Image (cartoon, rainbow, N blue to C red; front, side):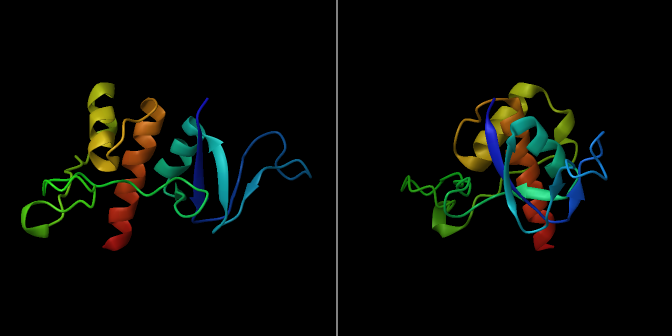
Length: 131
């Protein structure tokens, strides 16, 4: 299974048989954790975590390059960033379409569907945070 590093934006406790005991799993806001891609995707979709970026973490997505320089800076003709359109119902798209959308966002092929969904969810969360 692929591992994805995510940073939690809220404190969370896994609601399982260990809740309230010394074995409970707790995620602290601001801390980064390596999780299985499907688990990471669930936390991101709940809006309580984002893909981690920075040293020793998942690299920031490479933006689509439209200026012919091939440097992945996201600049199109005239230096304007290329914005990838993400439909509001992206989670209902066909799996191949999700993978293509993730590739357009990150500039790289996602390892699997869960990784693609994690990339898309993180970009949606990033855009929402800018508003």
